[in-house]
Image (cartoon, rainbow, N blue to C red; front, side):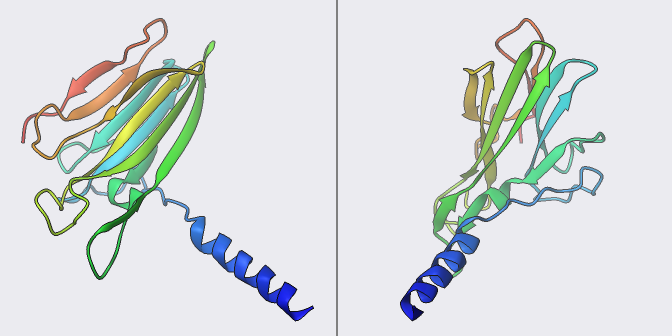
Length: 167
């Protein structure tokens, strides 16, 4: 009887440590220098879906689900090496369309001490009615072609892309 209860405890502990919830950030919080926030807004009245990269010069200013890109990455505290990437997912029904958005952490470098190691963003994958309509990183370490907003509207498969000003 004892080995069974030990096995049960070890599975329970293992499940609790492996199932890490990625915390959201209050959309009203002040965006500090160095923050790399990613937001999703499902706007039912306008029938639009927006995926927004938020930095110190680009506060959301409206209600949306927001995550810190760094919370989507797990680094080893001793070696500074990437251990794993985490992801968050949201679904959104807009008129006749059902969207699914998946954001996965993207490090600037798998070694946080290496070139671009202080950079983090997210990879966005968006499905509309089960069909993939967007699949790319929102930013790159060089700061060229970083996306500020992806806006999906009724009738168009491709999003309207707004680029962030170059760094």
